[in-house]
Length: 353
Image 1: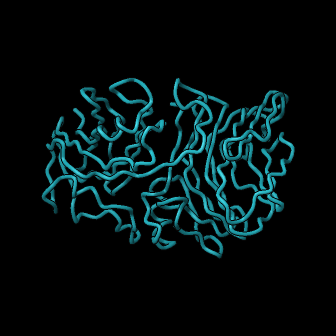
Image 2 (image 1 turned 135 degrees about the horizontal axis):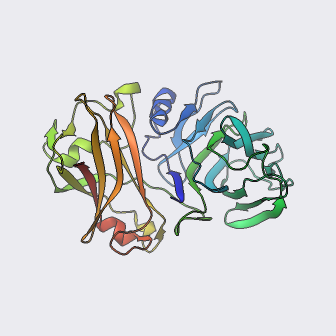
């Protein structure tokens, strides 16, 4: 799988408190800290619409789940708005086990470089403006590494035959985004890819990642509690959690019968995406097992007459948790999604047989 991660944070209410946002991010990320040192981090208004994440201090971070994909190549992009003069810091770090392997450094003058091997580029990043930062690293030591840095789609620095690994071994296993500076910053619309596969195996450009919510029932087979329409039981809008009470038993779908299936229609993409290339669709499902047994859940996509499993997951936990499945191509065409294809597709769940 070349698409390793994507998040536009719009599934979190921008008005969520620090504790609420931190709890919500904890459902998706391997680790997070918005409150480790004042000023606190929190959810806030992102670019254009939706939600971004504010980091107020260098000790605040998001730790992504394990990302190693059998490749030493990594591509990453994210939107950035500095809110003041930065201090020199390393806000993006890739790791092998627990050791830093390579990192993106920001200087107090707004310069950028990829360490270990890239010279400083005087980017002149200014406070109060959105930038889209992308970079590529071949994480190898000696004279075997490579890098490329892009800002707003333009290549500003690149190199080959350089040392791009702090450690003696190659590769990476996970990634963390850390607070940019004590002056604060907002991040939004993050993607991470490897060079594997035939799609999304390089730079994606300035991506925007909206969230679409269920708006109708296409077919139903599960039981429903606390609601009449099935989609109403799972369409709660942007999460503004009150700690662990974000997902409760107020309304939900339930089944333990193999092949029981629910499919839903979703909101259409905003008009600005009409005609745009859609790099991937990610389906987020919140699940819980109440019986003392493991069940298998198939996350489904129906596009035209083609139906596929986006993800198959064994469920064994008795608390609500988030599972994510990503589909890079439209099952009906085998090609990257179009906005019309996304709007017409149905997504849902089936109890595995």
